[in-house]
Length: 229
Ligand code: CTP
Ligand code: CA
Image (cartoon, rainbow, N blue to C red; front, side):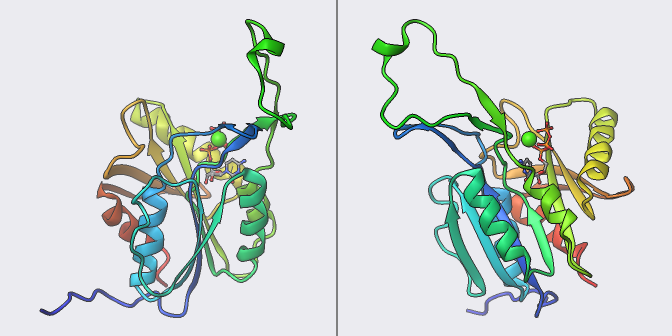
């Protein structure tokens, strides 16, 4: 049988993709996390490799089965906490032409991590957790942008009104200093762990460049179309 081969229009491009969601430990057995499955980020990495790019994929706690088989041209590194993702991303970005920050990064982490398991007996009826802000990896990446490097961020928003959603995305794109921001509506049932997705993409200046609905692999190709010279 003949395999269908698509365009190799990303040949020679070095692309860094982050996928999944970071976890912040509370003690040796517990963490604070989020519901990102890693599907959209992995789909982007896979599509980029299929189109000839040299891809580094940083995965943080993706769902089982999401990365079962992956094409040649894809190097995978596993991380878990935001600190680990940050270190790997800042390092890998130094040699990347394009950075796609699809990972859901924990905004806060526990101020202290318990050495041993937190016990009910010592905590009583209420457990107070104090969380501190994590560094903004995407902002650090755009601040250190190399000449000619393209940086793509993602925005997960629960806003239901399309106009308000777009406004939130525009403000976020400007705040982050990205070249492109992929705005993704999420909710209790949408966005996470699903096979399909709906996105709007804006530039750093807030111009709407594309809208796409479809499978996460179709969305991946539409996003990558935007970085083909
Ligand atoms: N991001 C990051 N480092 C963080 C938080 C977010 O690099 N500490 C990145 C995400 O990977 C994503 C983009 O920033 O590409 C936007 O993430 P999002 O959670 O939508 O925005 P925040 O700036 O964290 O704002 P908020 O969650 O308050 O809406
Ligand atoms: Ca956030």
